[in-house]
Image (cartoon, rainbow, N blue to C red; front, side, top):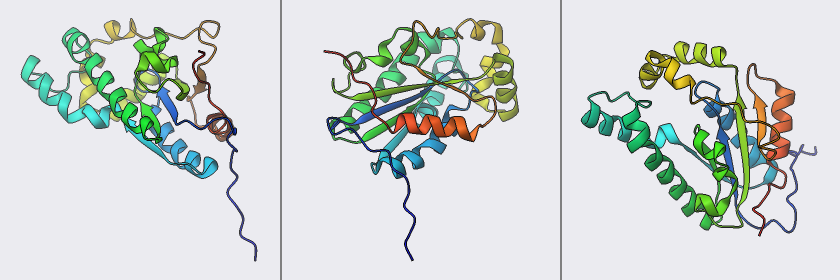
Length: 215
């Protein structure tokens, strides 16, 4: 009997560099769940390995310790103190870990809001990110309407969300909806409900040829 083969997306011959895939978006949109669904399929369809780096996993215990010492609230991830003094350092550290992997040719998936980096367009520029300049970058923006995202945040009852929920009016000022005209390279994915057809289209796009910065 012939064994069925897993369909694979063929990589362009001229693409010999590592891939960097971002799953970005606001809190409660389902970035981590979506990324964890995607990675096994990216493995199977490209025949390549991908490591996944989730900001909350890497910095969760560290940030809790620091914020507990600084503000007395280890669950704070949204106060001005955190945003001004710790937030960027976490993201820069995450990108440093990604850089080390990419330099070794290891495809890397980063999971986190990255809203500042998307808004500033930094996330689209390998040189600005500090990763190899020929890195093939894909940026997924996971979308969910604000009230639905808030309902998910309430339902998951994670301690790190307490400050956010208690100061929602302040938090929502940082939420933005990227304009398609301003962010044409952003891969948008509506995660209101899991749509297997939309997810399949996302996977097909991610395992194809990603874009690289123009030189």
